[in-house]
Length: 153
Ligand SMILES: Cc1cc2nc3c(=O)[nH]c(=O)nc-3n(C[C@H](O)[C@H](O)[C@H](O)COP(=O)(O)O)c2cc1C
Image 1 (cartoon, helix red, strand yellow):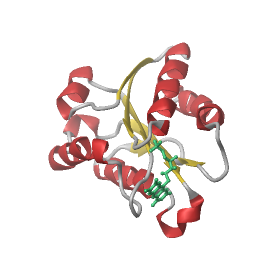
Image 2 (cartoon, helix red, strand yellow; image 1 turned 30 degrees about the vertical axis):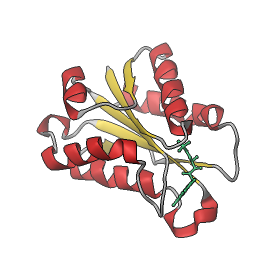
Image 3 (tube, helix red, strand yellow; image 1 turned 135 degrees about the vertical axis):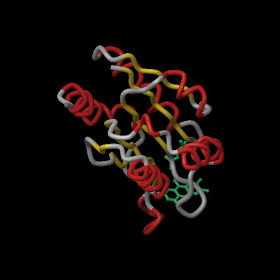
Image 4 (cartoon, helix red, strand yellow; image 1 turned 90 degrees about the horizontal axis):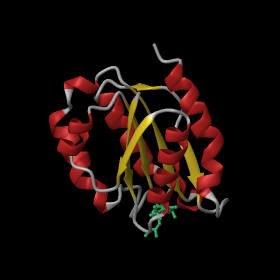
C-alpha cells in the first residue's frame, strides 16, 4: 500500500517525526513516501492509497508557512481520487497555548474530512510542554496506524 506523508514544520520537529514515520512504515512493509515541500503534482504522481499528515502549529493555531501552498492547492482542487482513502493526522503543539493547541493538526483533519477521507485513527497530539522525544512518543500510535491500514477494507 502506498502511503504519502506530508509535513509542515517551523523548527524541524514535525519534519523529523514525519521522517521517522516514513522509516517505520517502510519497515512495516508499506511503500511510504515523504517530502516536506511536496506539491499537489508530486503527490498525485505518487498516487497515494493512504495519507498521513504531520504538522506543527504556529502563530495562533495556524499551519506552518511551508505547508500553506500545498494546503491551499489541495483545498482548491479536492482531488476526487482521494475520496474514501484512509488517513490520519499527527499534530504537534504546545498545550500552554490553550484553545489553539494543535490547531494546525485540526485544520488538516478538517481538510481530510472535506476530501471525504476516512480518519482511521484519532489525531495524535504531541505536546512540546510534555515531551522532548516526539519521534519515540509517536511510535505506539504509528504501530496502530499501520495495523489500521492493513485491516482497512
Ligand atoms: C511562535 C510560536 C507560536 C506557536 N503557536 C502555537 C499554537 O497556537 N498552538 C500550539 O499548540 N502550539 C503552538 N506553538 C508550539 C509549536 O507548535 C511546538 O513547539 C511544535 O513542537 C514545534 O514544531 P516544529 O519544530 O515542527 O515547528 C507555537 C510555537 C511558536 C514558536
